[in-house]
Length: 103
Image (cartoon, rainbow, N blue to C red; front, side, top):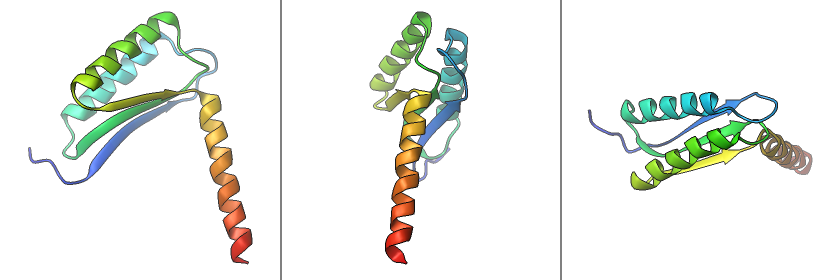
């Protein structure tokens, strides 16, 4: 299967209160790896957002995935639900300010 010239970043957002469980993180990682294997674009990395952190066993799963990504020259990032909300607020404010400046 020929790869295209486009770069792809895969991400998932989990709307979960509290810490992400090992099972949830494993499911996400398996999905990321399946999408990586079956995608025609050049994959540059993965991003998981959600929860208020990870359980200890979930963190171990994520650490193994980070090692796998490093071995495949990929980037991976985890962010909490709060970090996502803060980023959305910043972007929303920037957009509102640009709209005001155009008027």
